[in-house]
Length: 307
Image (tube, one colour):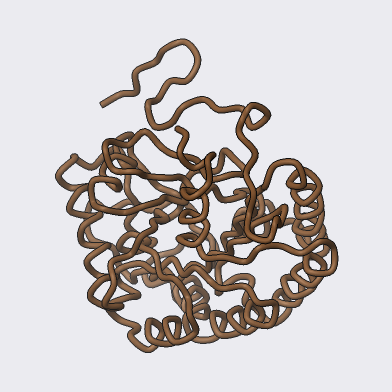
């Protein structure tokens, strides 16, 4: 169904809300910045089912080649075998709890990773079926509803708890995804990149929130797609924090980072994250929290009660 094009905003998913007009948001201990770090564990299939969709030239390997693409497949799995443990160690060193975006095929085929992340106090959120199968508007509503249910069920079965958050593979959504996510009982979605605070979405009767990611700080978007240097990326992280901290003194800000263990977990990259987090701690500090922790706090504040 095409979007209803009208003057001003052309979709119904949230209200227009300039940050300069909002009630003041305060994080715990009056911290100017809430920091949420999402680590993405997603499976790349050797051969995706017929009719599935993945982005063209998906990051992680060489130029497209005939199946099987061992370079891309094995590069991606590096995150599951090595990178995730290195990143969890860095986050733990700086007191930052990880929010793990886990897809269904990883949940079903990597039980050691599921248990390891739970044992280290991570929150696990749903991340679709695989990076090879994105949500698109080419799905029917029933197909998309089944896709969401299968993803949520896989996480529930693997962890023993129903996930509260959602991050779509490659940020993929249709024009009905927020409503279907809310109907499924989820509390928040991370696909939207349009703010520096959480906000309530207009997705039906169930309270449902956006936890916006700073998309330009996504390591794939920066390092793999735009090919910024490591030094530049580290400066992007630290300068972003400095600005958010300065602005957050008057109205709290959110810094949500979306990171991929197969990429930033490489031995020559992980140090930049370590140094960036050290800078943040030494230059004003932050409130470290999982996605659900941030949403719970936001709902408890006066700003969290507003659309």
